[in-house]
Amino acid sequence: MYLKENLSIEETTLPRLLIAQDVAAALNMGLSTIYMLMERGELPSIRIGRSVRIRPEDLEKFIESKAQRGAAIE
Image 1 (cartoon, rainbow, N blue to C red):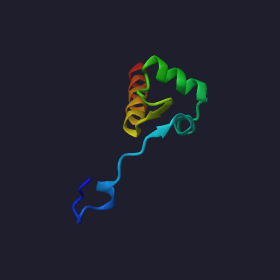
Image 2: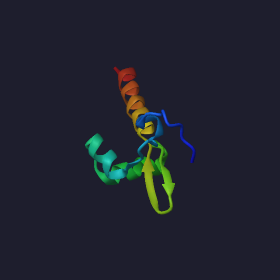
Image 3: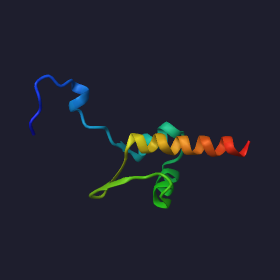
Image 4: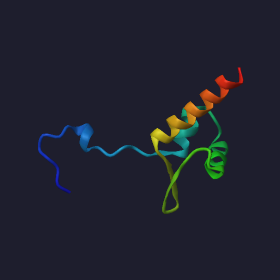
């Protein structure tokens, strides 16, 4: 992979993928609930072999969608 010499670390670092345990801790939810949300398609996930990962931006979108839905109910 060719990289320019003047790129910053942020520009060369790939985005981090979260594991289900990270998401469960961030949302203060049970691990089985996170897997259920992924299975339903409510929380997008990426399968890499037998592992499942969540992109941080997908987690943010999930949180925003829940916050907007809650605001619409009030």
